[in-house]
Picture 1 (cartoon, rainbow, N blue to C red):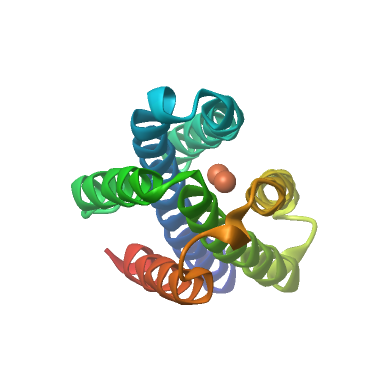
Picture 2: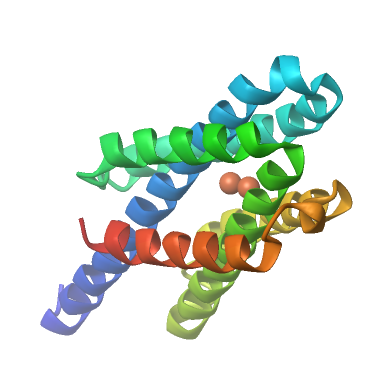
Length: 186
Ligand SMILES: [Fe+2]
Ligand SMILES: [Fe+2]
């Protein structure tokens, strides 16, 4: 193998490592957020809990796919996985304690950031080599559509009626962006 193709392979391995690690951490965090929301909503608001359960089931499927991709590409999980677990659950539980509107507002803010994040990854992979990265691009595109659906579901279930909606969106969006930056690295 020429040194040019070795360089290319190494570069692609680095891209996959970074993307799969951060996405696994994100899907893991999402799973814990919905677990937290369900813990608070199950009794307080059974109708809304049904809606959240559907979103949660999709996050579990996303997480399973990234567990598989980690194994397949021999990636490593974020070192901060225990923190994503605790922070995710606390955010989900805490927002849902305020009310289902706040839980939905939290969902809208996070899912917006995640959908944008998948779009950025799809653009990066397509710019590198559309053909070579087709399988991963297809996974990311499907998940992006799911996250967009979660975002729209939150809006359809009174997210905007949450107390201090603009402030909450701003804070949760920025926490999510920061978590992505961190999980790409560690
Ligand atoms: Fe997801
Ligand atoms: Fe989602």
